[in-house]
Length: 123
Image (cartoon, rainbow, N blue to C red; front, top):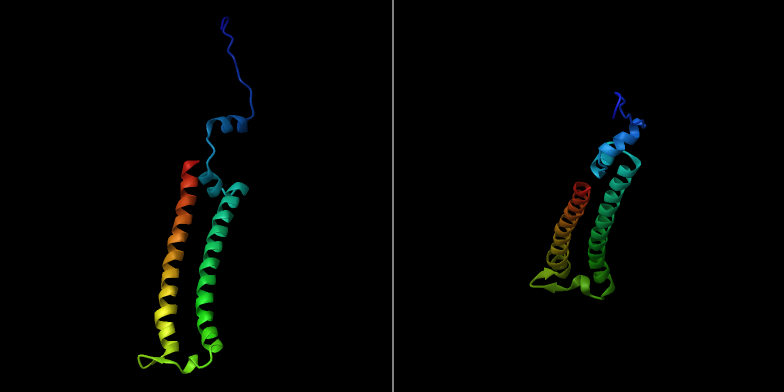
């Protein structure tokens, strides 16, 4: 550059900022942009689907016991080991499945959150 002339770049401030700053999902979520809201909604939907699956399993098990007892003639009066069959059904079938489903639900919800966190950190 001879004669004291200097080259000047003229650009919009947002264009410069776009070149300098790197896009990230975390920033979109923090700034509550439309894209950030979309990511958060997808997380909430995934967790809701998982919760509904778990609730469906529990509902089938809890409703299935009384329906089984009502549908089989004489099942309500049936006794095993001196205990009513309905009590054994609750203690040995419903409770363990309910507890196992709860643990499964928590693990799946945590896995969904970890996947979401990996996506956010990767960007």
